[in-house]
Length: 312
Image 1 (tube, rainbow, N blue to C red):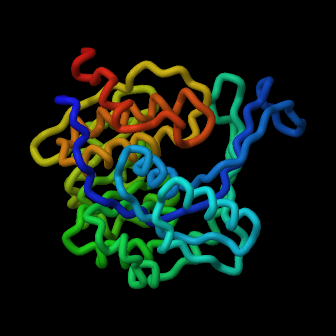
Image 2: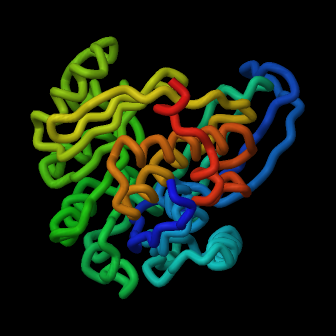
């Protein structure tokens, strides 16, 4: 690159906003007993993590979703506002704010997690009608399957000619995206989610999973496989990209950082493969810290790292 920071087009993210409670155990976690650990609370939710990442990467971003009328909701609204997210699309509902609890073993792997997304799933199609001015002005929309299928369909309809990206979230929730697959410009899935949507075994090669999903009308698909190379396909082009080496503190938010970095590249009109390299670098930075968004994340930091293609 020439060292000039390219201007990024604005984006909007729609979906979950909740409080992450992250525990790092000091010994392997076992059932039916307590384990000494350190705990930390921070903002979470797929859409929130992606929006926070985009903001750090220099992309003007609007967030739409719901917070509860409780202390957690007030604290999250204040925190996210300080991170320069446009929150005019975030409504306050008479419900508890969503929560995600993650239990990590000493090696950083995820031993167990539970999530309460009831407030996000309660949102109706007014989320797609009552858009904030910033969301209306954004040329790139990101949606995720913590939202109900009805709301996802309404957002896809409202997106018009904007670039529309989506995350499948989980095997169980991936099916919510099925009716709008032909409208999606890019879909992020892991192997299990891809297999669930494609009706294939999760042991199927990533190329086969990608071809099956593209046949359903997707503009592009990205299939992750943990520490193994991801597969991408767009138009006639496709390929694998290996993740860079990473020190793993915990895995929370690494996939969301991948999406944020990739979308930040797309917002700067970079090709998908080059954008994905930025996403992989962002994920590696996130793996090395506690929480879903690395404090040192910036577009300049990603630009300073060697690309995966250059290192092969």
